[in-house]
Image 1: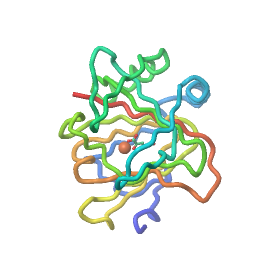
Image 2: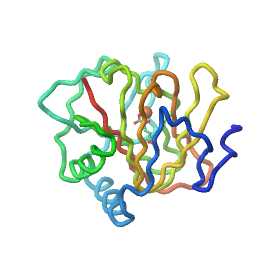
Image 3: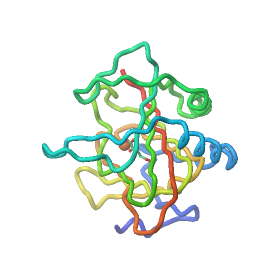
Image 4: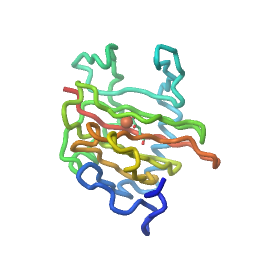
Length: 202
Ligand SMILES: O=C(O)CCC(=O)C(=O)O
Ligand SMILES: [Fe+2]
């Protein structure tokens, strides 16, 4: 992973492609972040989903939950989704980030990474329901984890962002079209992390 060694002062890859990624550390204070992490771990009805990979059932290596506007039916990758209604905490976060992202979100997918073994494999969030150039706002609480991207046409073109406690990462432009992203498992011990990806479903 060549570019991964070129960490700048903040511990990030140099020359992140700014046309597709926008990283903002410290959007939430340490105190707010600790509160949200604890509250979400304790109160969200987390599920471990079973997905189909090459025709075989595979257990998702993390826990997830789906919230959003409930005045609309969502069909997503051939499945019907019933989002849970917004909670007070989720609305607070949504209101804080919407002006920064210049976007009104109608749903959020929550991910709970319990330890270093939890992960999300290389993928792009390119479902048609998200539109051609989806803007996704990703908020992180808890353990710093490394977010990798690689270009679909050239896997050697890759970058890493350390997603810090209380940070916001905006994925935009052609990120989902031209790049894939992941959170890899780690060989180092890792504490709990909760990530929220705010989305607009059309
Ligand atoms: O946990 C993260 O930072 C990324 C999650 C993600 O890629 C997703 O929910 O689609
Ligand atoms: Fe994703």
